[in-house]
Amino acid sequence: MRIILLGPPGAGKGTQAKEIVARYGIPHISTGDLLREQVASGSELGNRVKAILDSGELVTDEIVMEMVDDRINRPDCTKGFLLDGVPRTVKQAEILATMLEHRHAALSAVVQISVPEDVLLERIRNRGIANAGARTDDTAEVAAKRLEVYRTQTAPVAQYYRERNALREVNGVGTVAEVSERVFASVER
Image (cartoon, rainbow, N blue to C red):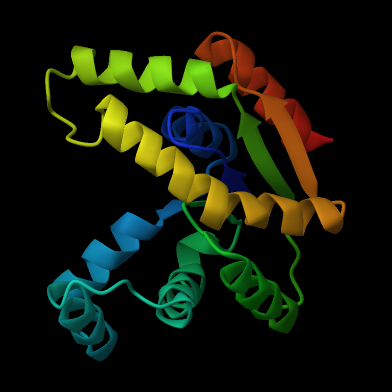
């Protein structure tokens, strides 16, 4: 199974990623983890990433996808993988398509967890209260900014997959178990 999980901040991607990984026995690949791993490795790529991050710049689509390519080449990805937080841009989606084409592989599913914006903001606010400041991105102001970034940068990725009849939208409102069942059903159809 080669799965992409999309959705705005607060949609429950992290929670659903754990459920997907447990059910299908595939590795969870997130951009943040890849960046931290590369920097810690001290590799040539890791040193390039560190220099970019240290300068306050954003890591380019090409470098992000180079890290993804490196990661999905590892033996634990032979049964598949779950991509979370990538592709974040249409350019990354296009690079991923080329990478998979070269491997004669295809995506099994692109799942977008959809949640109304008022529910997203409430979830993020409640998460901030529950975590008592453990996450600095769980304030109303930061949440609104993250949703705006999602709308401008990442929502077009959903449209990219929609235009290719690959996007499967799942209602993300309900209990974890209810949403998980919808996600599994969309992946397995």
